Length: 166
Image (cartoon, rainbow, N blue to C red; front, side, top):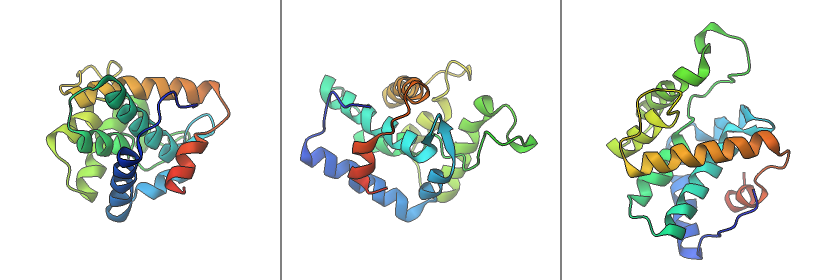
């Protein structure tokens, strides 16, 4: 996605730091083994959702817990399986992967209530429980925008891949 907003260096450094912090304490890197939409991996998708959510917050001067926003967005699809492969353990993926992502995140790192809300409710309205926090509403919307982009475009997020050296 061609970025209409680029984070200032200080904000970009904060974003990169949070990514590497999670990389050191979770299995987030394994998400690059799984395709999410089109040719985009789960890792690329999650990074894009986190980055563009953070850009939106900066652009519109939305007050929120920025650390939780980035971390929750990076972990929102932390389900750790290939949902394209037929398997009873992940049938009805769209309905159940948010709960699996939340369980995996809780297992692998400490998450706060905002991050949990973001992960648990990012599939609204498919999952009928709506987001309760500002941060969860933001990623719920940006997740849909990124998903549509990924299904319509073959190009990946080159700038983000370069930023995080993935």
